Image 1 (cartoon, rainbow, N blue to C red):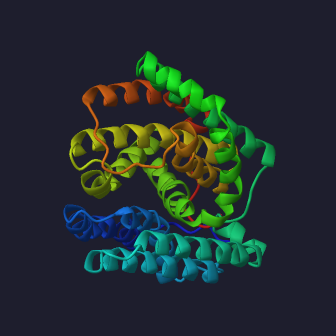
Image 2: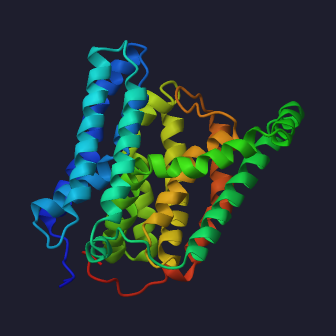
Image 3: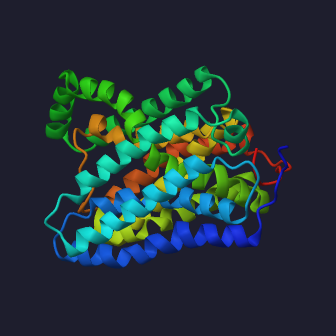
Length: 337
């Protein structure tokens, strides 16, 4: 039996409390740690778990039928572990909590694959966890995303001046970006859980709810705004404490435009959650290939940077909003698929 179950207000409220209120509350110890000069990367890692944790807690509380309970419990315990590590990093800043958090992610990701692959297909399919559609579709969507972001990286480098452009071309002629790219492929299987943590909340759960209420296009745009504001504690105390307003503005622009493409990928692949999970992973980790560094904290942005970002992301990703997957249509009931 696989009923279509409407999302209740109680479930939606619990989702918003965990997905949005928890990261804002965790912003308090994050601010304390940042102002003390500590490494706050563990907080960014933990925050990625919250959206899916909100969905899972809401479904468990509602006692929905045929839940993949083992995988849900794993994710919830991993979320609590990352929260605990964040709090410990404030009271005992000398330890390498970020490394410990990464070990938690790797262990939980490996166990997550085991639990998913040994779960009944019906349960995985009912709650959006099963691979859907053709692998070829997922591949071309991911390759298209890599191509678009690579074009963006080269345009940004070209606009940074002749000296930087020469250095950037030299970097791409070396083996470094290519070796890094190859390493990122198996690394996905060892670290998928945080990226799943966001996409299961945003693409699988909240986007269809907003689209049903506001329409396919307005719903995905609203999700982008909410997703951007969700990053506020990180904008204030991790990404760019000195230019947090510019950081938040850029964050909303990126989340709206990438939200469009991630949802596009989700829909054209037959609502395969693993496609946006892969896209999110590529977006966060390919920075090692595109920029040669993984440093994303304590950045300083100018309004010129924000304008350039808005133009590039707008030109490359906004056109996907005209795709047929965003045409007005009757939305299905929200619930297990």
